[in-house]
Length: 220
Image (tube, rainbow, N blue to C red; front, side, top):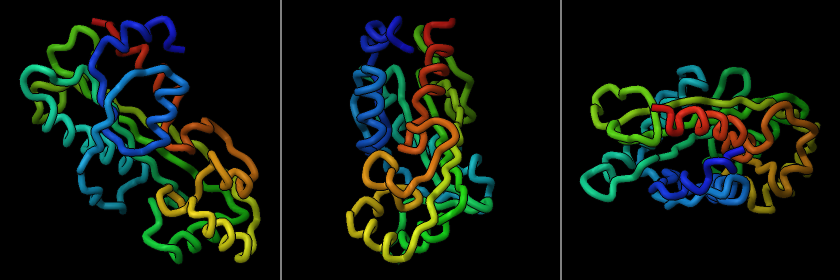
């Protein structure tokens, strides 16, 4: 979808403000984007009592701003910073990465035989002086422009026994993934169906990202 602009896009300095290997792989393999990875050090301590969509949008924003405060100074500043945050939600509750094995078990058993949703918030930041990317002004950051969006995918988990859940957790996939499972590997076998963007369940809404990036690219 970005093939018409990818060469000129990759002439810019782009930063992925995430240490997620899945987001890196999606952008490299399915977009062909060239970028540097600078994980955000923002402490994810936003109040989880707010609506999950507001939570992921604000967390992605704060991750991006933290990286911008470090890098957007003087020459060599990035032309674009990409940040994302993904949570699993059910019954208006937020489920992030499990704290321990028991937490992973509780999460997956809660999802067993029921539908839950995966929501990712994405923030794109560029310098206010950019002639390549557009965005809206950021309160308190006169030197930055911002574009935000989110995507939600519904997931139906199969009905699982405790033995199956424990055996899955034994694979080691659970601990670094929101909701305690990964659809891109062995976790695919416990998912009955999805309704929406598959890559969003992996942690990055690929199609919507491409649409938004096309929209903000060189539109001034």
